[in-house]
Length: 270
Image (cartoon, rainbow, N blue to C red; front, side, top):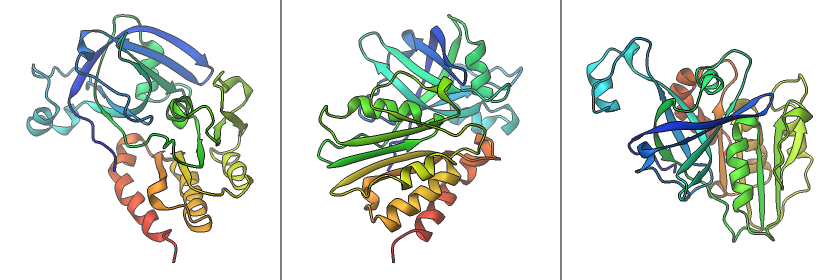
């Protein structure tokens, strides 16, 4: 079960970087991160809070109080992002944002962010980290899962047997991250290259731990394959949809728990 985010923090932008045509990096630091800590899991995530236009929130900031006393249209918009890295020595938090043209509240904020800008967020939450006792590791996802997959690969023991597949649009979206195999979909739908790449792998043997995240449609297909056809125990699977085509985060988060529960019930081996 995922560890739920606790408390809110305020990060100050210290630098930004365009990593690829479709990914922007923002590094946060400052005194507002004095109570922040991460590192137990490699899929740590934070809940970014973007204020509604023209709204001033009470001080001290308390999200529960805001939701209890203010109209819903004045609540901060919440967007969930994986932690790419956290350095407890420099107290720098690295977040990577997938860019989709001129859309996306958080993505557009990341492009406009400048040193000194402030960002409030809750967290971290998380639940997964590679088990060094596993015989084999499978990690697969689209761009949205890249931060967590990269952090996981970097945590693996040097002699761990693993396959890490990340689907991106094309070669320009690859990053120099050892241990990751890139899969290109071109202009095809998300998951159209990743699913056959996973299904084409040799049948895993022994104790397999799998991490599969990204667009909910292909995640559903790969969960059925890994859980039903390959019989990987539920407790060895970290698998969930980070997002869903045709849904913004507000709509997806409202239905995600029910959707996941239904898929798990449908896909349990007989």
